[in-house]
Amino acid sequence: MSQNDRNTPLNIDTTKIILDSISDGVFTIDYNWKITSFNRAAEEITGICRQDAIGCHCWDVFRSNMCEQGCALKKTMDQGKPFVSSSAYIINTQQKKIPITASTSLLIDKNGEVLGGVETFRDHSVVEALRKELTGGVRVGDMVSNSSAMKNIFNILPQIAESDSSVLIEGETGTGKELMARAIHNTSHRKDCPFVAINCGALPDTLLESELFGYKKGAFTHAVKDKPGHFALADNGTIFLDEIADTSPAFQVRLLRVLQEREYTPLGGIAKEQSNVRIIAATNKNLTTMVENKEFRQDLYYRINVIKISLPPLRHRMEDIPYLVDQFISRLNLRRNKMIQGLSPEVLAAFMAHDFPGNIRELENIIEHAFVLCAKEFITMAHLPPSLAAKSGPGAGENKNPVAAAQTKMITDALKRNNNNRNAAARDLGIHKSTLFRRIKKLGIQL
Image (cartoon, rainbow, N blue to C red; front, side, top):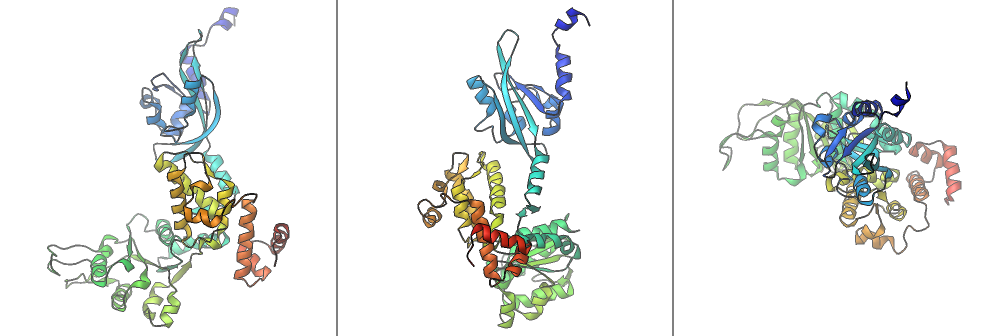
C-alpha cells in the first residue's frame, strides 16, 4: 500500500461495512431527530430493517423508556458531551422488551461541525436471563418465585397441565389463583383454545346459570335470541370458576351433573349439548371444613378436587418480594413511560416487615400508588401509601439490611409453622439443616 493510499480517508461504503461487522447496534440522527444510518446489529436487535428506520424519528423506531425522559442522546445533543453505559430497554417488533446499555456522543465532521448524534447500544437479553437464573428466581407464565413452596408447585405444573383432570386452587385473596389457572391452561394441550374465567360469587344463581350454560330465545323476559354460555364459548378449552365456595347448593347440583355427564341444557332449552372443557376451580375458603359443616356438597368437592394446589400467602414467601417488585416496576414503566429503577433500601426493609394481608395484589397496588407520586429513579418511603408509611414509623428501615431482614422473617416464619422444629423448618425452606443452623447463628435469631 502506498503512502497516498494510507492517507486516503475511508469512504462511506467502507464505513458501512465496518459498522455492519460489529455486534453492537449503531445508529445516527440529524438535528431533527431523524435516523440517518442504521447498522445490521440494530436491525437484528429491533427487528426493523434499515430502509424502514432511516428517515424516521428515533423514538418511533426504538420505543425506549428513555424516550420520554432521561434520553442519553438528548443530553449529549444539549450538553455537547458523551454519555456511557446508560441502562434502558427498547420494544422490538414482537412487542418484547429488550434490556440494553447505550452510549452516545456527538457526530462531528472533519471540520469540527456537529452533524447530529450517534448512539451505540448492546442487547443484554442473554445477560439478564442468566442473572435471573443465577439468582434462583423461577418464572412460569406471569408468575415468578424463589420460594421452595412455589418451586415445588412449578415442578409438578407440567404433569398437572398434561393430565386434563379437574383442579382446585386454594389460597387467600390476592395470592394469584387466576394466574396459576392460566399457567395450567397455557401449558396444556388446550392452550390454543379459549380460557374463560367467571367469578361465581359475584352473580346470583339464575344469572350465573345463564352465563355458564347460555339460554334459548324466550327462556325469560328480554331473551329475544339464543345466547351461548361460557361452556359453549370455551369448547375444547378451560373454564376457571373463581370463588366456587360462594355458590348455592342448587347451583352445585347442576354443576355436578355437567361434570359427571359432560353435557348440559341451556336455560329454556330441550336438547342437551355436549361439553368438552377442563374445569379449574378456586376458592379463598377451606372447602374441607365447609364439606364437614355441610356448607358445600361433598360429591361436587370430590369432583373438582382431583388435583389440589395450595398457594402460600405472601407472608410465607417474603423472599419473592424483590422478584415481584421488579416485575411490577417493569410492567408499569412500560405502561406509564417512566424509568423507575427500583426501591430504596428503606422501602424494601419496610416491605419485609409488613404482613401483606392482601398478598400479591396488595403489593402490586402499593407499587402502583408509588408510581403516581415517584418522579425519580427509586421509590422511597415518601411515595408509599400513608397507612403503610405510618405503620413503618419514622426512620423505618434505616440502618437495616433488607436482605438480612428478609432472611430473618423467612426463618422465623418457617420455625413458627413447624413449632420450632429446625429440621422441619429446613425442609420447609428447601435448604440443608446445617445451612439453616448457620443462618440462625449469623442473623442472631433467638429461638
